[in-house]
Image (tube, rainbow, N blue to C red; front, side, top):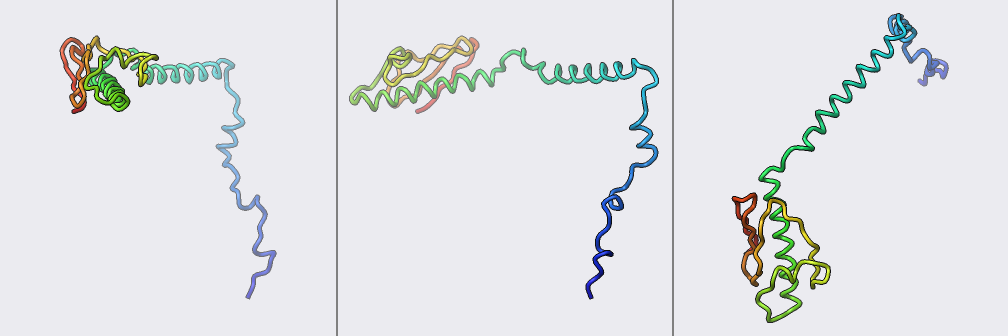
Length: 146
């Protein structure tokens, strides 16, 4: 048997609970002194600035050896890829100077890369051999590729 339509629908105001007297009083409360709003806003803004300072305080930290090694490895990877492309475009050539690979006039073009930790790269890249960078931060050497 189907219930009567008047029994199935209720007004929306019956479904939503009215706020308690405490909440109504809190929402309508006015500050006891005019400077209280200012003090609360000041405390909140100072707290936000403190959090932002903690989050962004790592910006000025020195570069770690691991990130230096990653950047140097990326440079070596780019040099190796440019050398492999050069060897494909120039059959019969078994070595190429690094200066021939770097710059906009080179074929293939390898944009100038930045040294990370005063490292020096292999001046000549030999086909089938690894490329290396030495003197990374005055102490380490990284080799990339076969």
